[in-house]
Length: 246
Image (tube, rainbow, N blue to C red; front, side, top):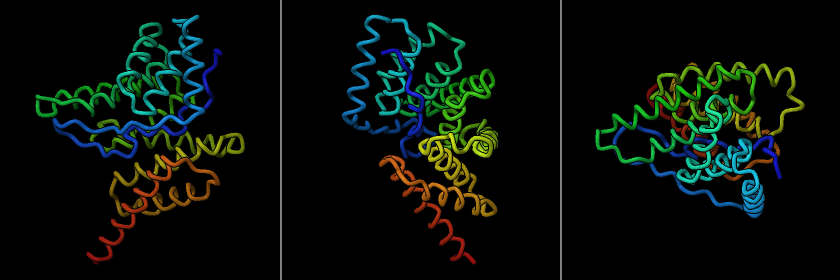
């Protein structure tokens, strides 16, 4: 089996609803359970890798599955092999650095968070370089958008998520009927989260619009629903606070 699943990214949320913050303390990334299909797929991929140990697609696929489930160390092994084989491959670079961003959050930093923040920013810079190398690659764009949106404005490149918003909006306008609902869900959730981070009352309509668009998606994954519920509660809390202040 030599195949990269077309939309393995579609539940990619960098922190799996774990808030990012600066500081030395490790951030916990809870392990996500593998359902039966995921277990069978992983077994098939690893079997294929035995006969093709340097197959780039297989290494990326296995590594991305691990990072999606927050098996960060295992992901680092496979994605590290991928970037050694093809250091300039945009997809390998994007996935490797998205997982590296998680590594930075999970580490205990005895330099009061300075090294953690350096490693995070370096990872985010490399993800953006992958987008520059492949600006029309849906997967690479989705990795940056989901990663940046869920880390927030501690990222000096945070505003690039709004460049991705324009790119995705244009794609949906031109080819929306061909885009799977899973990808649309990730777009809506990521942008709602990004605007929540902006914490700007002017953007409240955009948050609500993206949350409503997500609610209209017929089938939703449990992890996405959890993220949506948290964002909706945060949004309501912000509005209640604004009404109280008025």
